[in-house]
Amino acid sequence: MVLIGDHRPKTKMNNKNLILACLLALTCLVSATEESLAGECASPPTAISSVRVFDGEKIIPAATVVIECSKIRAVLAQSEAIEITEDTNVIDGNGKTLLPGLIDAHAHVFGRGTLERALDFGVTTLLDTGSMAEGFVRKIKDENANGPATDRADLFSAVLWVTAPGSHGTQWGEVRTLSDPADASGFVAELVGEGADYIKVIYDNFKMFDDPIPTLSKETMFAVVAAAHEQGKMAVFHSRDVEAFADVVAAGGDGFVHAPVDEVPGEELIAAMLEAGVFVSPNFSLARPDGKRLVDDPVIGPMLTEREIENLQGWRALRREGGDVVEYESVMAFHTAGIPILVGSDIPNGGTATGASVHLEMELMVEAGFTPIEALAAATSSTATAYGLEDRGRIAPGMNADLILVDGKPDEAITDSRRIDKIWKAGVLHQ
Image (cartoon, rainbow, N blue to C red; front, side, top):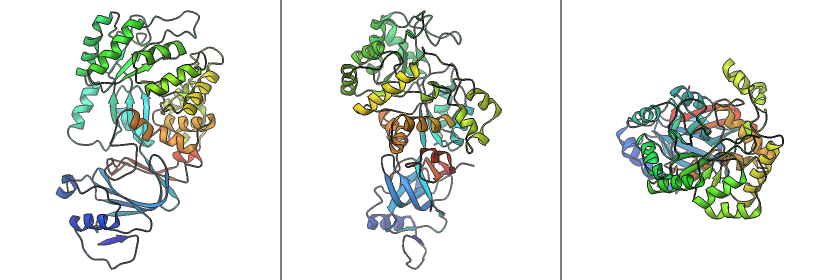
């Protein structure tokens, strides 16, 4: 055997002994799965020792994290010992911090390449809020039936958005639209049949413009929320003014993938949002032309392609002057009240880059007033909780082995999240 955490003699061991050792250490909270017992793993076990761990909520100053197959097998305090098999790959985590794989709560995914690129930056899950890639979501779900993906980020998707004729989302081509509340149930059912994990709704008449854009009627929006809930799906909203936010909360909507840009919500609306349990995923990368920071970043910059650099520099404001300040103040008001805030980049809009923008979003959150720990949680555990993703966003026994090992302490200096040393997806080291 190999022993991590003390210096007892080394002798051969098997999975049964490993389980016993974990139980004796009182830290292994799950038993070996059929997968591990059968030995059907994409890579040998890995133990990351002497590492600082952000477990999704707090920092563990020193620990050993054991990966077996696609799952985290154990998280051990540094003073405790665990017996591991001789083929285990032991990695010294001194001076490094282990993070859960990052989650982007607002992306538009048009192909597998986006999922692969996200993984290069430690983003192991993308929540797609609608695209026009017909059949793509079903294709990815078919891939998932063959086992966890190890060469790309995981995808959860709305498939397409629910929008009105002539409203936002129709400018990119011919898409299905909804105008009659009586048709809401059938519209939602069609999306669910195509693989939608939740329903994305456009309810925004762009009041920041002199010529407002049409949107769903209030009655139709209410009908969509009801239909989504009847079919066991959340309804998440593209809304960007306080009147729309109030309507969505009254309808029972579950969350927002933008923040208000017209005015900062008052106490009454914030209290209603808190009571309703909604979340908000702002897009600070779209508030100001901050994408240039990634281009100039000594770690991220060299990783970017020419096309990504061009897109990061292609930001353009879609709000009245001062809307960026309103957005920041609105998000901090939500955060202060205790409303969950999630990291979302809204890729591939101008000013963003797949994967990389998640790191910028966390930096901008900290500048707005979040602590680094709160920003890290917004890109991991908070998003997993908001979307009911129980197998990710945390480092704990039984969770997916989607992990990032970084140099430094991102819980103190958030930009250390970019100093990626290693990435694991479903327990497999990403090259």
